[in-house]
Image 1 (cartoon, rainbow, N blue to C red):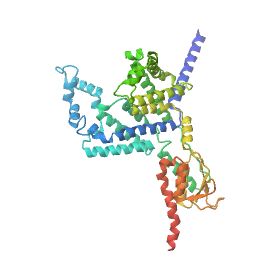
Image 2: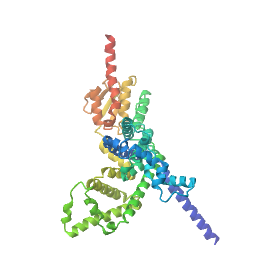
Image 3: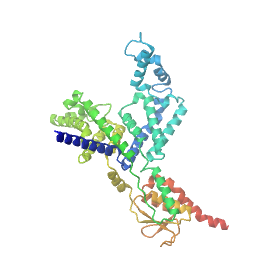
Image 4: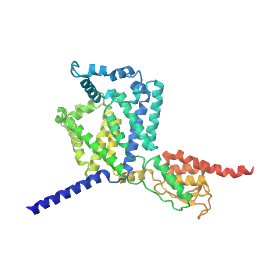
Length: 460
């Protein structure tokens, strides 16, 4: 009996060890921040699209004479108004503590009480100014400039909009809010960002000034923070799909298999007139309706359990793309579809993203750039080139080292040379990362031209 008990205790200890190792590995194992950066970019693009298109109507949403005007907001925040019109039972006989407890509960349950920057800013001019600042923060967040700071501004700004303009709140805003609050706590600018580009630029410049012939390319360091944030988004997306699927089971039309047909035929949502399918044969119409309905139920309920299987993950990500592309195409909910696919992007491995980025941004290569470590402008230009060249498409050559071209010259694969803005234009076309960061590379090449003119001007 004692031996059996010892075996049981040993087994439980092994289970405990496995659980702790699995838990720590799932949440806190250092991970490549590539996926987190991709989620940041897509989230920023969705936010920019939504709030930029709403710019002409921002005063209708949050202005003093908007759909819910400033006076209505003040009345909604008044305790006496809240208790009088929102209390589920008579207030007579309630003590002061009971009234306060009831007031706190009503405020917690009603979204219109939630805090918002736009409850403090009511002048139309200042609303437009702050909205422009918010859009600028979204652009910087998307590009990865001051990522930590802009992530907080973006979250506060979006939360303020949906709390003030609560009449237009729907699922897209909830998913956006979920992702942005997680992104505040992760190293979103560790890669695919201007922050990372500037860090690489400073490191390359230090190496070149020190006379290092082969600058070391330091990759983005794996981070447990990136892994934890990605895991939170993944788990949250599983909960969202599971809750959506189980909620649909409460509707009789989903059990009958006709909810999908009704969805694509609703006049308020449809983009294309699909009324012609009503004349299809009964078997074809029933097959279409049940395929949409039962397929949606299967995907949303099973997503939570099967997405973790590495073999099935590409299939479920493809199904997610098909589902949300259909929602965008046939219901006009493009923003909702885009942010849901952004959440699903958290399940894509960094290696897959690197493969796609290399296929899109890697050029033909075969270029050489001549620099002189005693000329600051050429060192800065060479540092920017290497910072924007993670695939080694351009080779740096120090002036006088097996080349006769002067510093600041770009040597092409056929031996021809370019200088100044012509060289920058060729680099922008070849180093496709510079498509987004070419303004940062402009000043070194302009400085090279000024350095060339300096001796001539001095002799006059």
